[in-house]
Structures are given as structure tokens and as C-alpha cells.
Image 1: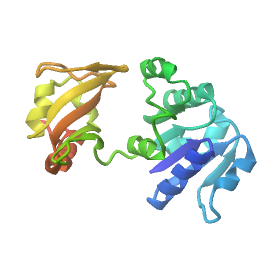
Image 2: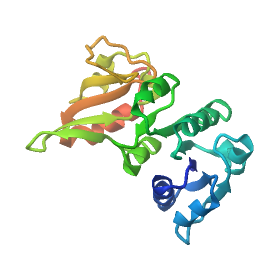
Image 3: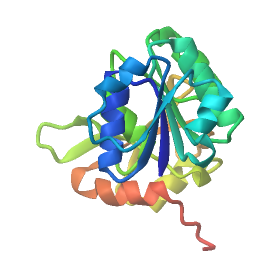
Length: 222
């Protein structure tokens, strides 16, 4: 994957290093060239000076071949505008924007831009959304046998019933959906909507299998 990061602060530089170590190509944008001093000497990615919502700057960062875009500059407005340009102008589907004012989160979610708040999240949670490769555990019972976790789901589940998801992932119970910032406790007939974040309860031993089943929907007719 090629990933474009706007903002070379502590989170942005940390993401850049981790992503590069994972074998991905990275371009990082910052309006201050001094910010690139946070990057290690052996960093091989592109360093682009400018604003992340400037189209020419994004093109220089090779946004046209990017699989993901993350905005972690120090400005909420710059982050959300950049994320929208990346998605709406260049067609990057996987975008994440950091915000400082958590009260704006619901507004940004309505625009279809996933956000993370700096008070609650760190570079690991940003990576979780950029490179969905498992469940994000939120709670575990004292014995460690049962987990509540946020899972990444295939877009093909949109329009399906919760019961269909549970049937495809034996041992899984959909505990709740985060829908536009509100928690929805579903029934089996609840239909999954675009933008829903799915949280499941299951035995820890089954979580990997459940995550795999929900990450790629296999239809019965397939």
C-alpha cells in the first residue's frame, strides 16, 4: 500500500516509521520543513512541504496511487478539509482524520470521515483503521475467556441483517453498533447501515476466526 500522511508531528512521524517498517510506501506532508527532523535518518518515504488540502501538494505526495490517507496535523479544520479532498477529489476510500475538539466528531462522521480524538487514541488506534487486520479489544472478562471488540467489516455487509452476520461468524454476538456516534443495541433483524462500527462479544479463542469471517463476506450463492 501507498499511504499519505498529513502532519509530521509525533503521531504522524510514528505512523510513518511503523508503516514503512511494515513494508508500505509512505509520503508525509507538512508545511514546516523543520518538522521532518522527527523522521529517522533512514526514512525512505517522500517528504512534501505544503498544506494537505492543496491538490498540487497531494499530487506530489502521489495521492493518486494512495490506498489510504491520514490527517494528523495540529488543526481540526485542516485535517477534515484534507480528508475530504483526498476522498472526494482523488477517490481515496480509506481516510482518517484526527480532531482535538471531540464535540465535532459527530459532524465529521456525518460527512463520512472517520475521526479519532487525541485524548482517547494514539498512533496504534490510527493504524488499526488504516490497516485493519484484526479486532480491537475493548473489554475482557477477568478470566480472559470473553472479549468485547470492535471489528472491521466488509462493505458487503451493508444492507444485511445482524442475524446474517452472526450466522456467518459462529460464536459471535453483535453487542452493539456505533451509528453516527450513537450506540444501537441490535436485534437479529437490525439492518447494517453504511458507516456502522460493529462491536462483537465472543470467546477470545474464537475472535480471530470471527474477525476473518466478518472482514470478507462470503455470500451463500458464492
